[in-house]
Length: 531
Image (tube, rainbow, N blue to C red; front, side, top):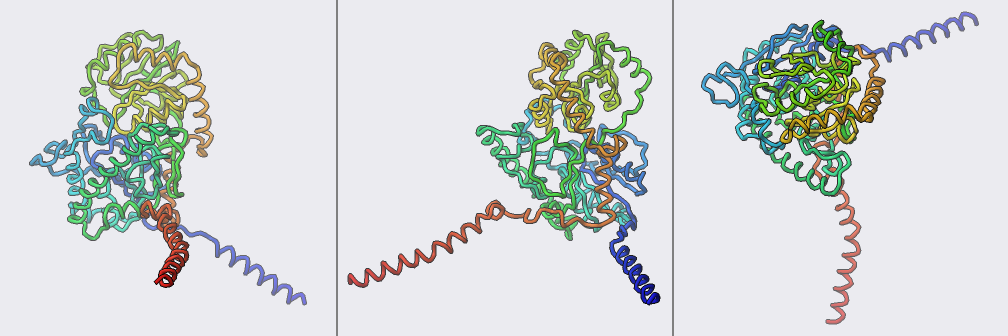
């Protein structure tokens, strides 16, 4: 009997071991390489995704980043392998690119034109041709990348479908990166339902809670955006068909993206209906602040009434393109303040007052995180806006182009700052705006409350921030492969299919058919009797 019990016990232990082994996960870590792909001009996105890449390197992955040079490009010292491709433009056939392949952003246009998609110059689509030919037409690059064991491609999706085609050629699953609030044509193609009654269109600058007039305007903007996107996809597809004939078209490639990492947070965006493969990762550039350089640290600590930061960002910034009256108005307004002001600008182009320090570069996040910082005068790009709210600093928004007007609208309607129109910048307008966020304590209280909520969500305690969240999703695909089960089913449906209008019409037809047949038969019978 005892022997029988021992045998049963042994069998039970073996069964337990088998059950344990059955559920043991064995991630696929073969290769583990990550390939980051950008459009021809990615601006601040290049820095943001490189930080995600550096986080992945610390976790043991090999990361390669492919970028294109611009007038803003700088040498980097990074653990990420950075490959800089140049467009062959020796004959100057592509606009906004010089002979050596350096992209020259049309920064002057950004100040002159309204923030509307239809204000884009038509020749900007030629840049797509340049990008696709440089990326897909380089056989040496394809061979080089093919020799590396990459497991996933992280693609900066905006105007970058040819990078999706490259990932397809390399047989890599794709994680998309979206550097704005999640809306627009690409977002729709990647599975987001975007009703113009609920979701503000890209560059519409409407409220999250729209009136009828705003919904009408938002619908018109959405229609125009769709027309522009249709032409954009046509241009991209003509390049893909010629350079990568085995690849699907751009819309199909977007629909196959495994996950989308959105560089935003619900605290600064409108609520939306999203599939689970779309993840808001928060502020990638946020984390634990570093000590300030000595000359900045002494200036900041010596400010008895606090410090204000002024910056017009990175992506569309060129000091020489900023209208002179704009900076004169800012300097005159700053001279009337009790606070000290740190200005990121070209010192050679400004006559700064005594309370203003002008620097070519400054550690923006580290200064925003300093307790002496009381306000941020910003173009309201996604990164700077997120950093300010994360640090609890109220904003004076001066939106210039692209999504900055949308961002400024969110800041204003949430009580986190005020907005100054770029066409109405005067000394008094700037002074009044800055004074408003400084004197009305509600702005500071709101940003501090939002900051606390944001920081409470950071499970790393600020060590990795949004970069850690993004890296975690990349590793999910590296270890476990495609996340097809998270994609929105039916994202390719038409409006009629999405709302089941075709189904309702079928049901209505089926229900109406018998009584119609009965009526028809009765009429015929009555007619025969009369005859």
